[in-house]
Image (cartoon, rainbow, N blue to C red; front, top):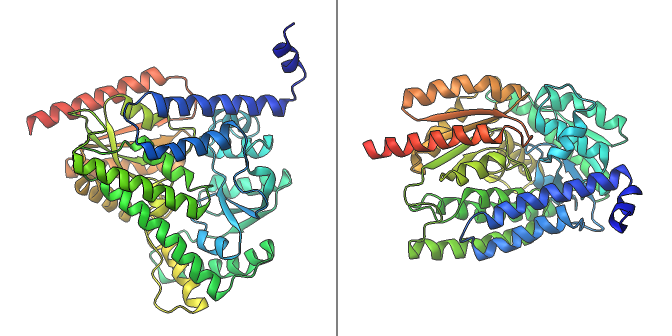
Length: 427
């Protein structure tokens, strides 16, 4: 028996799982880096960050009070103001989805299964340093997993969202929820949220958003100066990276992309269809569909997902820099602009998709729905109807994290890209 075989014989299930995770993350990173020519030089920061954290097990925030969040609706500004570090616990590992599938219903959402599987296996790079997991009452599956996380021994804070965002009653309900969280998070970190601290962190997060807006606006250019797979890497890094380091790295990337625009650089093919991506969020390393789109000669120029555009799109608008005014302004930033399909009405999301299609000069929309993600599955009919009325081509794909059936998916995506190219020739 070889030394490697002997080592595997004495591996614990946890070590074996971590090794499989590292292999999965490494394979995706190799595809992101090596399957595409002409990557921006300043993407090296983000590639190395993911390799360090997900392949090499380097802890991103040693000695810091980390607050796990299960949704983009949890206010980062409040956590930063309490001297905590928000880290998104939503998971994209197929390895973890398999574990979650052992104790969750087979038809559960892939993202929820993978997130619970990660917490069960305790192999996430930052799960062992989490002070508390803030879980929102968004979709029904996330509501129910709160109890399962508590059974695993995690401290869980339920953050309540209203089912309706248009009414003043719903908005006031959410403001009260954020006010309460502002008080409680200080007890968790040992640092009370102060007026000065919140003002500073609103400005820091705002600077990060400005950097993202600068990068996102460059995607409107023709030809496309950067591929969508790199944008997903940048925004996924925001989930767990140091806020100021992330901002500096994004600004450096913006400068490089601006130089590309000035030089007329094309990151895609000469006739690559321009795609708006929407639906269930691509979370690293589950970038299966975005990578397939761009390997099929498409280019993702915009997205409407909670793992990218929606995460950083709208900024806090403060009228008066008093404590309660700032807290309410933070609450409004997370609710009023939210286009998640959990709400009873979602006309804003359809308007947003049409706006992105037009302003980014797109050729079509790809709508991803994870099998078991009922809100996106239910909503796609109304979105498809609205897109048809506007004459916007849309491809709907229901999938999970599994690498199986990739050939069938790629065939559908390639056919859609060819139809968009033919449509473009007829214009």
